[in-house]
Amino acid sequence: MITKQGIENVAHVLAVASGKGGVGKTTIAINLALALQAKGYAVGLLDADVYGPSIPVMLDLHETPAWEDKTMIPVRKFGLTVMSLGMLSEQGQAFIWRGPMVGKAINQLLGQVKWGALDYLVVDLPPGTGDPSITIAQTIPEAAVVMVTTPQEVALADVRRSVELFRNYDLNIVGLVENMSYFMCGHAAEPIEIFGSGGGLKLSEELELPLLGQIPLDLAIRAGGDNGHPLMTASPDSEAGQIFQMIVDKVLEEVDH
Image (tube, rainbow, N blue to C red; front, side, top):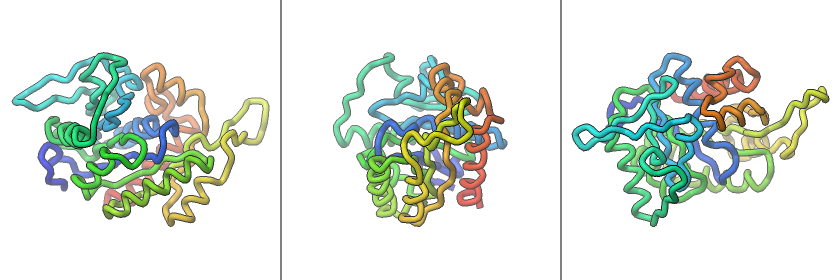
């Protein structure tokens, strides 16, 4: 059990990280949280991407969190307990953060939110190796990490740096998820590998980390992010939905023991 104030009743923290932006990290975080919730776990979702919080848009959240005894009350959506800085500002407002402010904001989202009793708190980190990732690593050394990448080499190079950061803080990196791995076209029998192939497997072997799953480019995933109904609520039995469930099973094997 984690002892940090605010999340002292959270059994496990699962951080979803990436070396660079644009790899679908937030989409992965949301759908992993929903897949965990579907298995009967009490799950929270923290949008710690202080530079570009997008979870409110992707979950179609418009509520502003209430306050109780100087503590924020997270909102509920699709069975998840959710908190994001994006719920505290006007839509489209820019967040301008300098170093120490970032760490303070992350600590407030952890310690000044009434998370309650949770089996899992899924944390969507901003991309890269900046202050938010370091804050999570320093304040929650018990956190497990899922790294998200895409097949092309430029994404893999950035993941290597992020993995090195988390290993320097002795965090448990559960494994890699390769997103946008392939596209199934209705006019072709074979998958189309738009961003190349084999990158996730190569990185998995190089870094000695499990490749938890390869998620296709799926129009339903994109639509779910736009209309506020993520894949795991709209099409949980789809091919991509089954892959998310398989990834969660592997995460549970590593973390929930």
